[in-house]
Length: 115
Length: 114
Image 1 (tube, rainbow over the protein chains, first blue to last red):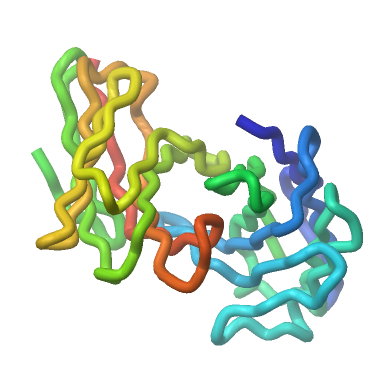
Image 2: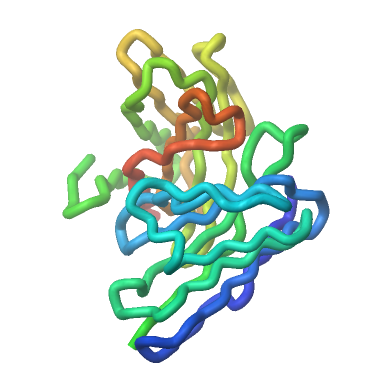
């Protein structure tokens, strides 16, 4: 399998601040990265699909101005939660893939707590 | 036995027994299915996949069965071990997403009793 990392692994911030989460594919070039959100005891919900060099495609109900996604290189995508509020507290998980790969490879997740 | 919690069904299995985790998928046009294992506080880990032109696929200690008639997927784990304790998700690949984009199911928590 491939290796995908996320940074930070957990972050605590004050309400109203912005938080950036990085997702890196360490051993392959990821043309596509996905961002998911997972609340306790629930499944992963896809937030957006990010293709390198183009704008992200957001799922219905996900605010693109609140969750800014940048996929500037084939190994890095970032998710910025702007003006975070307590209801944004969640487990954010990214995954990476490429056309020659049939499946996604998931990062370890980032735990966000907004106070 | 099985129990349904607030959001996550739980399956309790004695160590050494076989586990069967079931999943009903939603889109009859889905052509690719994956099982993931997620341990507490970690990202999902790929276990096994199957395409819609197959009804069974075996891996190491795991078998996935696909019944397209009733849109049902199952994961069988042989000789369940304590390290198998985790939440298991099935995921389907509905069109036109391509192989990479998937939709996750609800998940089942597997508890292995030593």
